[in-house]
Each structure stands twice: as structure tokens, then as C-alpha cells.
Length: 488
Image (cartoon, rainbow, N blue to C red; front, top):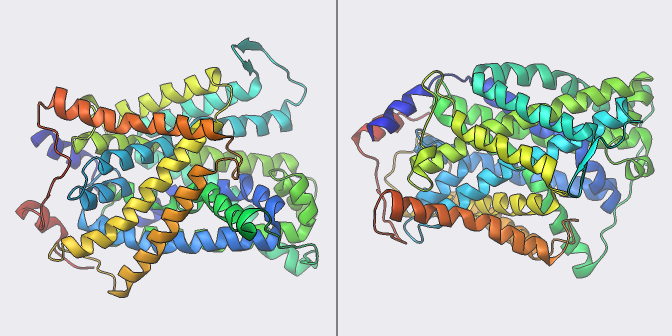
């Protein structure tokens, strides 16, 4: 316990609310530049707006719920999975490690996929004639693999140095991407280049297109709900009670505006068909039409935002793994922070090794991404459900930020929506382009490591009786209560 308290002191007081906002920028811009184009190709611009703006509204409502829970547990590192654990431990304690492990998978294992996408962009723009250097099994290693590996190593190094450097880098890397987003929104309107005449709305397939819509929300979830990472960093803010709500809500509002307006601006400039034909490079086409030839510049902006997203993911995943161990839910060796600067170096190094192996030895990351997305949405669903349970089971727990009672009803609606998206998306991987039923099996195998390491920790390392229900405290102890007592 004393070691945990000392570790907690190492990470406190380093972030301002604007730092939390900066951490989310790369996630938002990466989603716009690399994912939305595929949705437009599937359902049209108006269909994309329904999916992404609708999901962004849900994401904004969720961060309000998370803000209340973050202030209930200001010392909990690990984010929304920890809130799910606190809420559900009374009913079935293995839900906690399953959620936090799934959350870690989402942020950690995505590094290889994002890095390879970044590498493909770099290769297409500046090394188009480059071929395969050598082959490892079924993997034809080329420029894109070395770019991905370099990015993974660099984001690890930045995070190891410290959170302040990471935040400064976020502002620098995302500046160009944010400028591009503003230009997409404003410039075409004033120049007269924007037109909605090509926009369509079409949902085809089973359930009159509803199953397709659910599958697309399943894909969008990681990007649109990603502003919740503010909760993971909540113990590191200077003033948790004020900084966390400000960072969460400002990033949520920016996310909603960006996902609603920027793609419409870009698509209205080049036309829906151009976006469908070039779902990632459409941003280059739009930028060139607005300001002239600048494909290299906009590609650099996109790559910078992807690198920023990877940096945020690395820090978030490392903290989730540390929080999981600190709460006694995974291997004891991961309950450790660097004494130099309080960073979860050991945990981030594990992410580094796993993702480098994926880049060079895994022929396709699709099945892993499917498992990661499932783990993330599973964690999100239980976290939102956890808000409802915490209101019911811990009414006396101090809440520096307490939302009005009607938010419980909102949480119920979101919980049902998230549960439907998670279940339907998981059982139908082909809808979202994640393959076939083999992906379901791989996802279940990967997620099983969470409960397995939980059992190893309890039975072999801590020598404790394995309990499937843990009542938990209904009010914090004296020390914790002093930390959460003052209302916002």
C-alpha cells in the first residue's frame, strides 16, 4: 500500500486542462483523415453525418458521465475501465480485469495498425517506387514497415521522457492538422467552391440498412469515443476537480464540431465520388483545390496527426496496464512507475515490443484490430452501466461533480445503444470489414488473457482466495474522502 501511495505522488500535478485537450487532438484528426472517407463510400455524405455526428453526440454525453466518475475516484489510474471495475465488482469481479484489459488492448495494439497506415502514406507520397526489402514469413517488409517501427519507437521515447514533453509535442504536431480542418470548413464557403449537390444518403443490406449502420458505429467507436482518455490521465492534473471536466467537455465539443463540419467541407469541395474513390487521400485533393498544389504538405499534416495519436495511445495504454496491476488485477511486476519522472515505462516497453513484433511478423492486423475494438466497446458499455450502478449502490459517496438526476436516464439509453452496437458488431465482423468468424475466435482468445492474468495474480502471486464478488466500500476511507470532498 505504501508503495502504491508513493507511486501516486509521482504522477500528480503535471497537467493543465488544456494539456488534456491536446492529448485528444491527434485521435480526432486521425479519425477524420483516415476513417470517415470509408464511411462516405459506404453510405454517402449525409449517411456519414448521421453515423459520425450521432456517435460523437453519444461520445460527448459519455465524457460527462466519466467526468463525474473521475472525480469520485481521483486517485484511480487506468481510466474508464477502473470505473467499470468499481461499479461491477459487487456483482461479478472478473468484469473489472476484462474491461481494463480490453481497454488496454484497444489503445496498445492499435499502434501497429496506425503505424503501418502512416508508413503506407509516407511510401505513397515520397517513396512510391520503393519495393520489398526482404520477406519474413508472409510479410513483405518495405519502407512502410520501417516507418511504422520508427514511429512506434519514437512515441515510446517521447512518453518515457515525460508527459510534459508529450503534451508540447501534441500541440506542435496537431497545429497543421487543425489549420487544415478549419480551412476545410471555412474556405470553400467563402470561395464559392462548396456544393452539396453530390451528397447522398443510402443504407443497404439486412434490417433495412440498420445492421450496416450499427457496423459503421462499431468501427467509428474508437475514434469518436476516444476523448475519454482524459479520464485515464485524471490523477496527473494539477486540479483534478476543475481540470478534468474542462478537458473532457472541451475535447468532446471540439470532436462533435470537427466530425460534423470538416468532412462535409472537404466532400463539398471535391464531391462525394472523389471521396469514395480516394477515402484517405481525399483530404489532399480538397486542400489542393482550396490553396493550390500542396499534396506533400497535407500528407505531412496527416502523418503528424497520426503520430500524435500514437503518442497519446502509448501513454494511455501504459497507464491502463499500470492501473490494472495497482488494483491487483494483473501481474504484480506491472505495478511500477519510474522513480525519475513517474512514467509507466515498464508497461509502455511491453507495448513497444508487442507492436514491433506485430509490424514485422503479422501479415494482417485486421483480426487484432477487431479484438481491440471489441474490448474497447465492451469496456465502454460496462463503464456507462457502471455509472448507473454507482448512483444506485453508492449514493453517499462524495461527488465533487454531480450531474442532475435525469442523467441516470440518459446513461440507461446510452448503455442500451452501446450494448447493441457491441454485440451486433462483434457477431458480424464482415459488416465492418473485419473478416469472418475466425476473427471472433481470435478476439475471444486475446481477451481471455485478462481474466487469466487476474487469476494468476490472485492465486499464485498474492496467495488469495479467488472471489467472484467483492462488496467494496460504500464510502471512501478518511484519506480518500479528504481528496474528493470539495464540490466544483
